Amino acid sequence: ATALAAASFAGSAAISQTIGFSQIGSESGWRAAETTLTHQEAEARGIELKFADAQQKQENQIKALRSFIAQGVDAILLAPVVATGWDSVLEEAKEAEIPVVLLDRMVDSSDDLYLTAVGSDLVHEGEVAGEWLVGAVGDEQCNVVELQGTTGSSPAIDRKTGFENAISGHDNISIIRSQTGDFTRTKGKEVMESFLKAEGGGENICALYAHNDDMAVGAIQAIKEAGLQPGEDILVVSIDAVPDIFQAMAAGEANATVELTPNMAGPAFDALDAYLKDGTMPEKFIQTESKLYTQDDDPQAVYEQKKDLGY
Ligand code: GYE
Image (cartoon, rainbow, N blue to C red; front, side, top):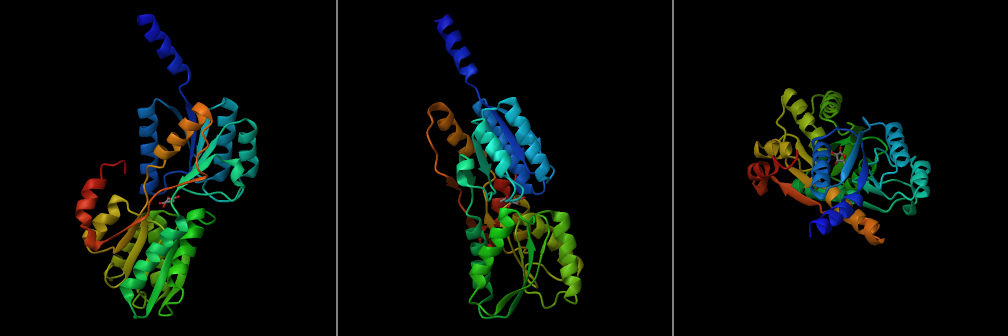
């Protein structure tokens, strides 16, 4: 029995997977949580995770992928910072028969260059945010300022499109300023300061739409420093549902957020496991849920639930 156990143990150790993860960086609370949860999921499954932080640079991601390929990893997780420019390196991975799973952002490459993608419907998220605003302002005139995510990233492109879809046909709502805040708190604050200045202090700004909560949190600070009340004088709607935005909602300083799960690795590892075991092909897109939260959803309680979940 001992010999058998040892043999089967050796067998399972031999098939244990080594997976490379090219992460974008740590621009947001959401991303930090995604990184933490990916490590946790890997550990729970006995996967050896090789982690590479690209510091927001696509060239670093391409280098990391080439190094994973050279090391002969079993699979690669890629959270692509921007949408374009991936064809060559994805072809190299395909050539080496190393499956690539995209996490949370999309690429413009042909879909036979990756195994599957785990993420939310990014256009829909923008639509949910925009529909919330349409409902909140009714017939009132509403000038919106928009903080975009990282230029060229699929969430920045799609969340803009989705929001515009939702407000189109509502002539009382218009986006008067729109600029990137790079998904960071610091930039969100800086750019919001410039919006407020350009708009004579901000009295005529009715709402802020931020492509993520971190930029919204930075902007809330700028609004307060300008002597206005975020959440009332300027409505704040954003995306991610990180713990800090629930604190802001509980304080009445933010109004709504669209939830994005930071656990993209769970479904990714499930798909990879099945594929590596017996070639089971996953769906091309594994979609996570998008849920709206407002001040009516007991934000303090949600904060308490979320704060220890990897953020
Ligand atoms: O919403 C944002 C982040 O790629 C969908 O990236 C993701 C976004 C997320 O930094 O906070």
